[in-house]
Image (cartoon, rainbow, N blue to C red; front, side, top):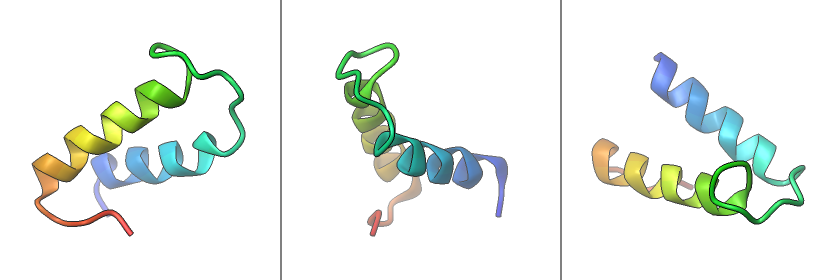
Length: 46
């Protein structure tokens, strides 16, 4: 597992524990990061 996948796994786990919905420190930023990763990796995130 490379560093990018480790970061994505961390973001997925951290998303359930954050209550902030903001772009910089919250869930919206995580969603955008996951969308960019899905486009980069060319595979579904399930």
